Image 1 (tube, rainbow, N blue to C red):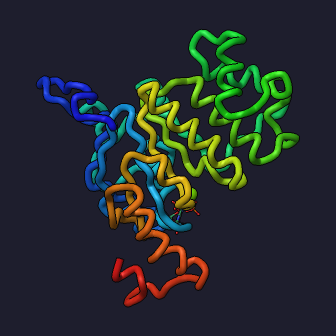
Image 2: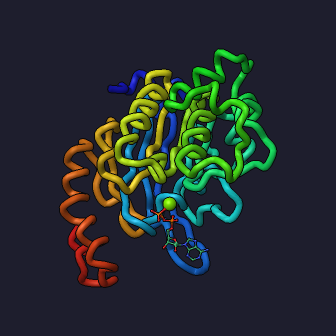
Length: 263
Ligand code: ATP
Ligand code: MG
């Protein structure tokens, strides 16, 4: 379990979290999407962010990464105690932030080996093979495939995760790494996330599948743009299963007076 001493020091020499998010608000199309999101993430920690469709998880990921159109209207994002709220996506990437997209991009004509080489510092055959093996893909089968539509959704997802693994970022934001992955393969993804954390990467693990939550050190539940519960992963998982999943089955809840009001 990560400890505060694993954090870095700010300019005043205080131990600070790798990532500190303070009261983040985001509006899009006149709608409040994030409503005062705060949390912190330490090196080597896996922070599970659970929430049903439309709760704002991807919007939070894009805001942290600094994607165009996702400038917060209030709040701050600190990396090593330094305010990065208004840095560009490129500057954040240079500082060690990376995002594995919910729907990975396709690159016509680009081979898996080239795609992974771009992500890897000092790429070598061994490093590329290790990255593919970390996502349970045979290098001999995949290195010369193109990262295009000929790959299945699950394969593309794994290859994107292999690139993040190879990159060894300081912070990996994984937006639903389990989507398009069948239940039997969830263990592969869970193992990969733990391996990243063991190498010192802080992982923000976004999911709406509560089976993924035990891999986290701490979990949070997002609902309508707010973090409504934080704590021990099994407790948050149980709460989600009890209070949120039935809502998905039953359809949308009423905006006022519905189950969410009582979360
Ligand atoms: P999922 O589990 O389906 O991936 P999510 O938790 O990632 O969902 P987001 O994609 O962050 O949810 O979307 C959060 C909410 O913001 C949704 O209700 C979405 O419709 C809304 N939203 C996103 N972009 C805009 C926009 N440009 N204008 C209005 N609403 C938007
Ligand atoms: Mg999403």
